[in-house]
Length: 78
Image 1 (cartoon, one colour):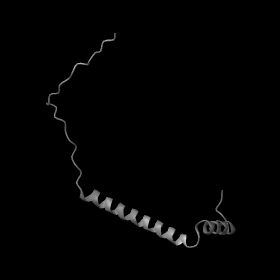
Image 2: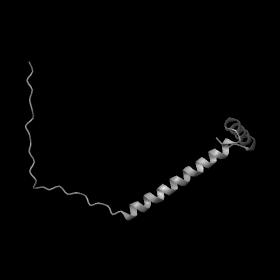
Image 3: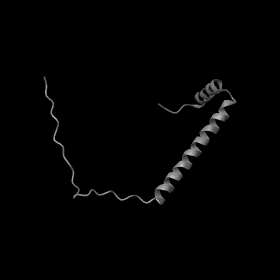
């Protein structure tokens, strides 16, 4: 499957204008641009938080701690 030619692109563009209207297309483009900007901003914030926050050392389990083990409960069938 190849890329659409010039007349196919014009046809697609015309259909998009008919579906959304000429007034809605700039609003859609503005919304997409804001979404991309917000995504990039959040990625930068996430990256800066990850580099400034030290990672926690894994917790070690105390091997000397005593644990109680209960016997399995049995049921009687009638």
